[in-house]
Picture 1 (cartoon, rainbow, N blue to C red):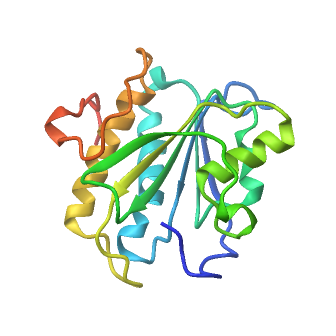
Picture 2: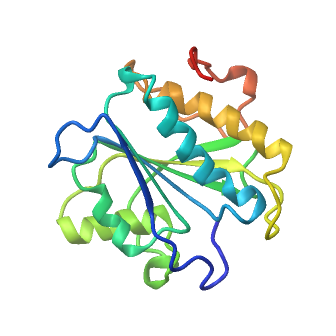
Length: 199
């Protein structure tokens, strides 16, 4: 979720790489989650990144996965897309249908292009401009949130939405052919649950 101007602007990105393919190479899969952990359900993105990093340690079949979290997307994050084979952007959203929505993301120059808080589309466009070539395939996972008050904890409904999103992501990360992105508001009963061994 986009933050008020200046909110968290100095926060450094948190980066966790699991089973890196080689010291000089980026992991082929990047999970980029953003949000403010101090603003209620806006913490869904960072919490998602932390949980995936933990799960990746017990799911070697996922291959090398890098989880990067920050307060917001910025122009320099285009550099993090280098050498990736797929990218999943993750954010809390008050507009997405519960429990989450997934959509493919294409490079596009939009109104956020010159701001400090960019959209995934704008970050991909920066990559295109820098590399003079297409960006890696990318998706946006928008996890439904309800409350974004400063100092509030993540609400129980949002926690449930996070668990549903994690189950979808575990299937997306798996070695089998990638599933088609579900429609907004996919029912939790339709979401695969390949997280045996979690906990």
